[in-house]
Image (cartoon, rainbow, N blue to C red; front, side, top):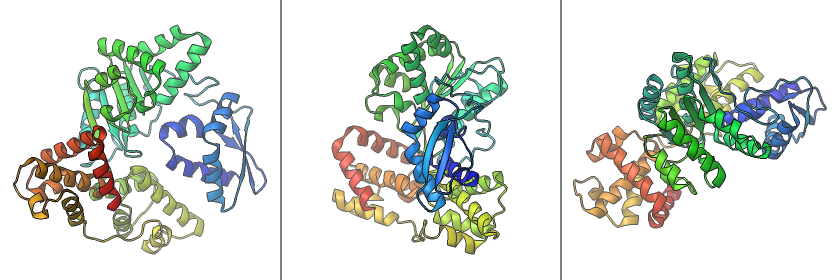
Length: 435
């Protein structure tokens, strides 16, 4: 049964955020049980209750998927299980003065840089080299599993190593909320303020979760202002840019937009290949070039996590059936999950749909015309080619006779209009669904 739990945790690690997995799943333990039941032990009553409320269904479904049949899952409080660094009976984040990182595997050295994240990587490097001196705050946004958490923790780890006297705090927004609520209930807000307002570098992952929570936003606003006024570095990540986070207080939005805002997007083909090669090397997986090419073409992933999950499946299958990894095994393991797609990038399909929707000829899109309707249609095409197909800025610019900065501007313009203009939102959503 231990192997079932190990496999279940492996699957959970690929499907949950790093913050969730590290804080709530990594420290769970199990013991031998019946074949159709899994007994999981948590380190505290608080931890058990939180996992039961937020993760029990996910654990149960994942265990059933791994086992191939329904599995009854129970969670109890175990004796002698060490508490994780950042989760205790009441989750109190730890401010570290030493260089010991919370996530040592997240460094700049093992972050794969490509056109999808080069600007975000450059901004993160600059902040790590000179915390509080440039780009304050640094706001990194993008979809799930694209490397935001890796980058923000790489900053924290680098700052700890280079400035050993600095007090660095890396925390998820949900844990920030939990700590604040716990302090309110205990009437210990003075301690809360000391903990969060006397640090040198604050890294908050998934900051969008504080939106809509009035007291939390108020506390974070004051903490942000005090740290920024003192020249302390603030690093934030979110699934959306500040202007697109619903129910975010205007004052916080203004503060978030006062620094450098950078985006990480889905990896292009070249970056996908480098990521797969890097992950295989980290896991000591010997993978032939033919298999690497196959995975790169088939797994046109929307996230880095999806690439890592596919590689994990392939490794597990090779181990379970006692075979070496080759093209045949890759096809057997992943062929149904990732069916073959047309080799040719369907840019013409994008242009045809945009032309039909906006009543503008396809030839006009690639022309030099600069009238308002034509520019808008061209920007929509560029946006869809970037977001839905994953073409690089350079490739899109080459097709339209523009440089990559023009394409970047087009993508950002459509993102901005989509977030605040219902008509544009309906148009783009409709085109995405047809693609």
